[in-house]
Image 1 (cartoon, rainbow, N blue to C red):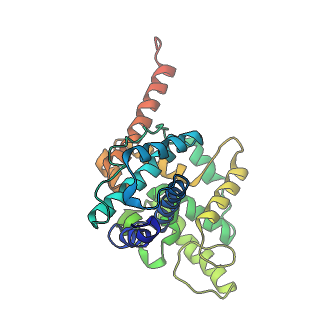
Image 2 (image 1 turned 135 degrees about the vertical axis):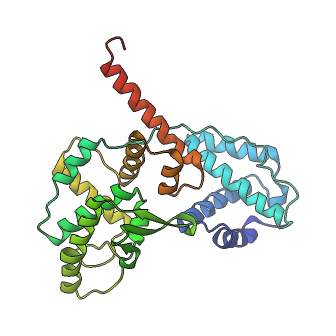
Image 3 (image 1 turned 180 degrees about the vertical axis):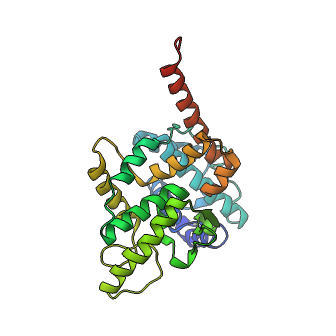
Amino acid sequence: MLHANQALPSFIEYLQIEKNCSHYTIESYQRDIEEFVLFMTEQGMKSIDSVEYFDARLFLTKLYERNLSKRTVARKTSCLRSFYKFLMREGLVKENPFSLVSLPKKDQKLPRFLYEEELNQLFSSLELESPMGLRDAALLELLYATGIRVSEGCDIKLQDLDFSLGTVLVHGKGKKDRYMPLGQYAKDALASYIQDGRATVMTSQAKSHPFLLINFRGDPLTPRGVRYILTAIIKKAANNIELHPHMLRHSFATHLLNNGADLRTVQELLGHSKISSTQIYTHVTKEQLRKVYNASHPRA
């Protein structure tokens, strides 16, 4: 008889070493499995190989009774399906009770993005006289120029930048690195920040580390810090724009497609492993075309 908690460490090790999952993903998987273990305890099931298809269905029913979103239920189901697939590979169970459980269709929400006029409004509101103002400009230009995730931006080191080639080395999800091109606006903003902003703060605070983005104390900037900075920029620029960090990534992809970039190129730039993850942006561009048509055509 094998308890789930006995198999969990091996599964976590598999996610870390073989699947190269991020720390966030591993924590999420662990919470989902621990939640299922609690369900097993409540149902009087002591061994993971005693779980059957109907038990898996009952677990999903319990999730729906808590009014969880389809996306959350799908994630938990997928996690347990992967867990049992691993257990079967290791010869610890004979069947995967979640293999026949259908995943609920996720509510597809179109990614929200900023129009070019709104972005120009943000850029023009920046104050470039202070070290932190230069940092804010570099941050905004970097996120929009590359479409990188905020966590990827916080991981960038000075040596990852190549101004002669106009590229930045990005360390993506699953330990997948990619080189991203930098436009002239981003290169100029980053150069000014590094020379006149970052260097000033690092000297005054007597700090020394290789991370590109820093806070006013000279410490590496965190994703939470980025959210705080973007909120402050919005308050200065216009109160009618709601901005979260991922909207700059959405704007990057949407504007590329709107201006003729092909889907495969955008997939590579975003660091998506599957093109299906990128295809959602085609829905955005189609929606934009529909809106323009309805607003412009005399007989729309």
